[in-house]
Length: 229
Image (cartoon, rainbow, N blue to C red; front, side):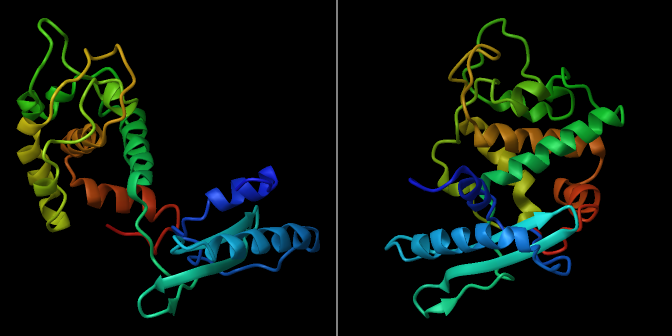
């Protein structure tokens, strides 16, 4: 957002409407009106860009949601406007919930950050190219992208479709197509499959399916009733 204030940029970054409509909208404080006008102008200009799809912007205070507005089309082909109730994929933001699950399980004494992933998910040893004499990868290495794993399995296509209920089977099937590209603990290397492995390991440790745990222990306590897998 070149030329816009830092406040506008920060607020537009937080535009994923994960649970914006889960609570009633409060009255807009008069002091926020100039900022809202600036955000609205910037967002309207952004939505008119040729490659823009749709997004929602919200402002919250300590009292809750005070303003929200949607921009663009939920269906570009049909020219269907987006609303503040439109549901969006959050993609890699899902990793934050996996990390919260890790911290909760550490808090509850069910895992340790230094635990090897294979303690809970021995299938991880199907990953290829393990460095000779290297110790097993740990939960904290998976969480911090320092496990040395490739970003995705190759090819990726067979493992990114199918019902949610089968996602763990997809992860296991992908493991022989994942490889080490660095020795664990030596480099930062962003890995989507690494977080999938972490999710499976944590679900095994929790003795509860990953999707059920996240909904019960994270989404619902936060009031995120409009978020789901």
